[in-house]
Image 1 (cartoon, rainbow, N blue to C red):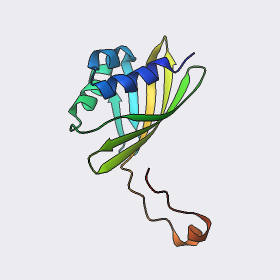
Image 2: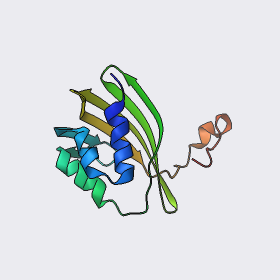
Image 3: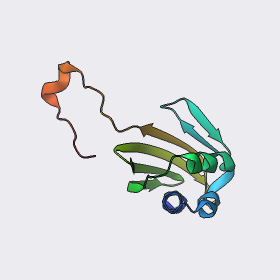
Image 4: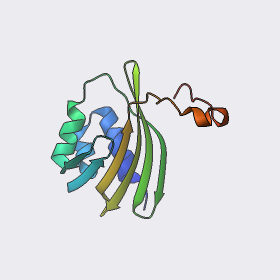
Length: 126
């Protein structure tokens, strides 16, 4: 199985092609956003959420990895002076996305704990 529907979903979202985006999603798709404790149930609601996001953003799919019917995506979404980051995991059934978990971050680094500062370095320019 290819990552086809996941890649096509992100390409369609970037193009604001909501018809093609919807064709990648099962009608009863369920997408969870654990960072905010939200669940989006259904194709129409998921597309409505995407359409409602304030304009000025773009999509940069950095990585797609698939194994069988599971697909992982790393996505970067610049929006004005902000950059949102997403690590997403999807299950594809019948050539459509049936379930997903999207771990979103606002891209602002938390302050790392002092106990490990000598072992790490800060990422820049994500």
